[in-house]
Length: 190
Figure (cartoon, rainbow, N blue to C red):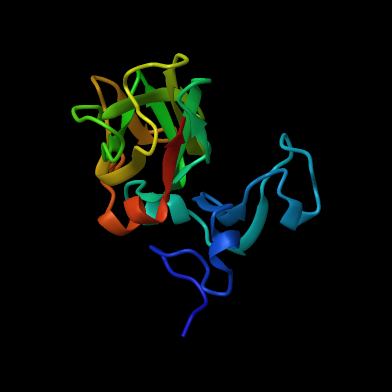
């Protein structure tokens, strides 16, 4: 049995290692600047792990492989940014301002808060897109003990586009409930 395939990342990598791997025309590569490659230069060429010519084209459209909160704690009294990272299995180009929906479970006092929309911030031309939702200090959009999560099919185009890099092929922006669950959660502090 092969250690790789056209639709899955190399099987010999750990889940943590797979976060830094994506498909390119050269095959499966590790992100430039990775500690695992031993090269801290983020401007370097990515390290080719498995050479498969035209892999990104043979795979079809880019798909979301992971979503995670970059922000791991949020304090209502301080306010601030909540950043979300969406990883694709290959590089994508972004047009406009797509968004990721952050669901608020309203576990704190009262009801009716959320969902919150994190807007595209950066990452076009890579396999990792960052989205940001900003709240001012003491904003009523969250309360202490609210739990923020990512649900199924959380990414929306909002009139924008997400396409396979360098093409007009529209990327798949749906995500399973398992990907949403794996993103974890943020419990809002006072």
